[in-house]
Each structure stands twice: as structure tokens, then as C-alpha cells.
Length: 113
Image (cartoon, rainbow, N blue to C red):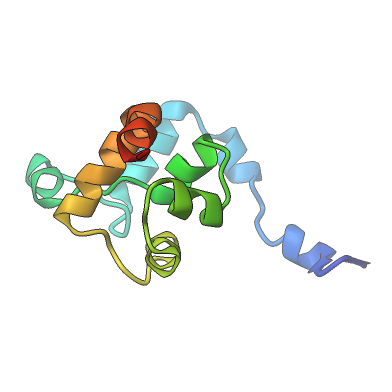
């Protein structure tokens, strides 16, 4: 049976009955035993760089890529690269995105001639 681009077989690929039968504690224990899903250590967290998610910021402001780029004077190609993961914002761009996320109106006001 086809429904659009998805076949029924693809939708029923996983049998969740065993998972549904587990308690929360059993699920947690199973996750902790999974070698591919080890939790991050405090050292891992410290070395990781927190990058503002530009796509989330833009969507929260209800702006298109073109509008966001124009409002905040960011080259459209750069914005697209950040959103697609082709490039990562450098330290100053991360700081700028953080300020935009926290107070977009102040940034707009500061950039208005």
C-alpha cells in the first residue's frame, strides 16, 4: 500500500511492543548499557562549543531567510550555510546570534540609521 512517498512497510518497520512493555527504569538501564549512546561526561560538556541555532532563532522571530539576513545585516549565503551546517559561525558571529536571540528589537534599533 502506498500513501504519497511512504509505503506502509516503512511505517511499520519497528515493533515497539517490547519497548512499550518496559518500565521507565528498564528503559533507562537499557539506554545506559548501549555502547553507542553513552552519556556525555562533564569533561565532554566543557569541551563542546555551544552554538546558537540560527534556524531556531529565525523561526522564533517568524522571518524568512531573506528577511532575517536583511534585518540583521548577515549575508544570505552565510546564513544559509549556517542553517544547512555547511559552515559554523565563528566566535563573534555566535556572540551576535546570542544577542539577536535575547533582544532582537535592540539589535534592530542599533542597526537602524
